[in-house]
Image 1 (cartoon, helix red, strand yellow):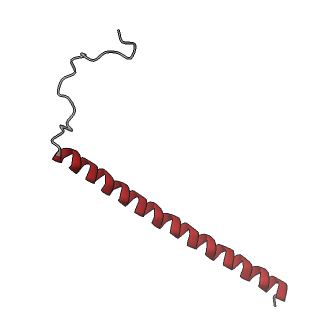
Image 2: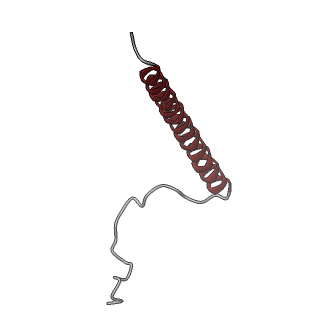
Image 3: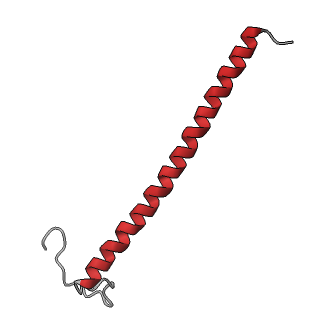
Length: 72
């Protein structure tokens, strides 16, 4: 038989664990939403750039015609 104090402690521990689990699930859900939103924003940005006719492909040849950071 457990004492009244032990029962209260066990109930408090159970409440804390349930709250921790709820917060963990909430963080996971927010992370998933954030990731999905970021992907949508990136896709929209790429669509907008493509609609403006900007070439998003990397250069086919590297000709080294740009100036170095030192300007030499």
